[in-house]
Length: 354
Image (cartoon, rainbow, N blue to C red; front, side, top):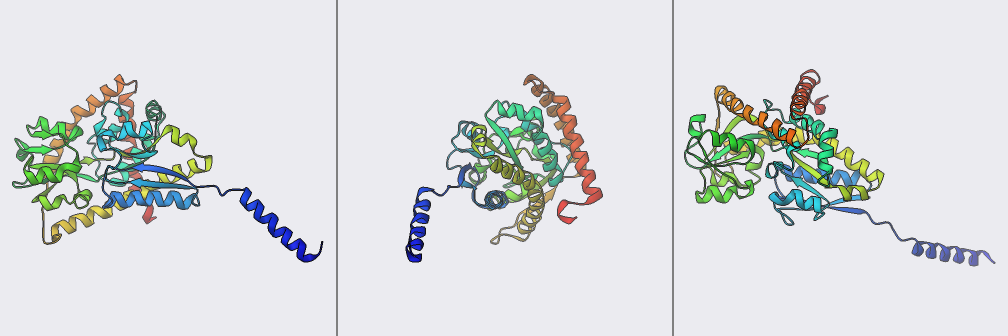
């Protein structure tokens, strides 16, 4: 066989080989997100998806379905568990009984630092007790979001002190709503994604919310004031994956997902603090000519809110015990984590400043 014949034989063999061995397609995970494709949380979700794809070399991708396209917030737990999507966002306040282990970190503990709260929550969610509880629901924890410090948006008369809460119609869910109910507010249980319409049409006077989502959800357009309650953080909002979907991933894909989930905490802690500052500045200066009056509750009023919360922390312990968990130990461990990361911040600074 001459040189030319050998060359064409080699080319033909290579072509046959390429045809015979199909390219391996990337694994694509569908992600259900009840919120819109805008704002700080949306940007964080995109960062998460982009990092997973980048670190896996394109082997693992995430396709995000925004705005509750596949399920609403109050159906997220069962939808992810059933495999409607592979992973997505769950707000545990809609599932206080089923997700009692997760809802601990949504209780009003005395911490206002986003990074500290996220780190403590991450430790809590990766504990064996919580992991076992989630596994029974066909769920696996991936990482945590947070919605920043708790604020209240009002149309009309503002909330300037605890005394102003009485008789007000307030949209709220979870323990924060229960405390308001104890303070003789008329609490309306409704998704935050419907707060715009509720404020606009007078269904309620005020809505419990979060500094950095106010602009994203455009709720400043139908509010006149924003009150900083200085009353705990909402860190119990997380990314969960269907347990069966996780099992189908390769070891390298699971490793990437776990690593991005851990790094997401530092990214989000920094991002939430920045977005909170920017949101408050924008709302103070005005967006499209509309300004909000920014009010901050006094230290005495905030202390009173924390005191009123203690009843529900004890109640949570009892509910956790009924679910087969050690409620008291979990509360103490979570408090210890808050102290641990507060001390780390004070001694070393935030990770992005070291």
